[in-house]
Length: 450
View (cartoon, rainbow, N blue to C red):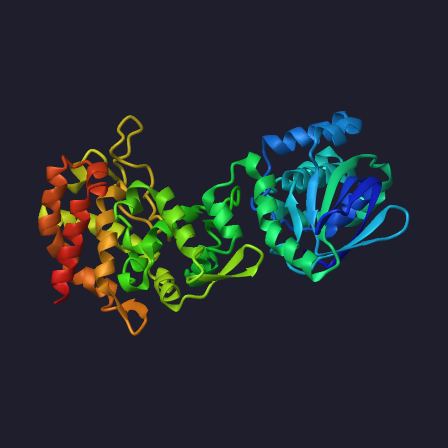
């Protein structure tokens, strides 16, 4: 949360005190909702609130049937480690840890209500201008702050009530432990109807914190770490690539997820890569619980492998841009493969799919390139980068400069590899889903290191 304290007034409320977790349920006033929006963020919510059909339906209810809103909406769920009852049905909430405190569910309600209030304050014409670029919750805040005085002027005219539930611990050590242990599970359960992805759940559980720390800074903000986050790069694409350095960890560590990993999954089944990564991170010898079910990576060997992800996305793009020329050097005609598309100025024709109107971009760093082609062709090459790594003195590290190695050897490797592509009838699916191509690439890279 942006601030630490807010007072919410309930129009009606009931309280449950029978368990180590306590709960207040009821409806809060529009004035209280404004105060909550003043300080709120949705960090504790596993998914990102986003403008769309859901928020439009909520706004329509507020506009056309305000009295029915408490019955048609599930409202919001708030978690606070400190909740104090005041007089006149008011409750003071204090927030200290954004991982386990804040709005756990109902982010779309929060977003829709904020947009509705702004429209009431500015009028439809001015609000349309002010909200033109607003698509996600984080983009509402500057607009809300800018027009806060106008919002204050209309709050007395807002008569809606919002169903609200507050979860907080009993005032004891047992209560605090129960709160921290259950809050992540509650957030995920309440969001089940939103079909949370495994990546979203893992992100909330802290499994991706080390990966986020390892990545090149410009990439971090481009990743969709949780549902509706809007990132250009899917978290599962990065998680799949973590298995390149993770696969170098020795069998003696006893990490079954590593020892049994099939390399074709980095292309064929990224969902499997995510699940295996999550299982690895849930191991007590790999990570430790810090707050409830939120975990922190503590295993130095695994941590060293994930740190290699600083270079892997860059190398992926490098292989992608270097591959066509290396192929043509071995067997001219890469552009004639049916799944390959080309950007050549002046050759674009809307009726001809072979040529592109604009240069394609690399997957991670969005650099211009000439050829657009399926990743199945390069997946075995990217996997073979593991042969340039070693586990030495308890850590994964590069044996040699990977870019220099690719510059010196990719064209040589292609003298053999292009034949496998031909035998697969130039089908990237067959290339990317066949174990033997991964073994070929690994054996070749390993031999060229000597």
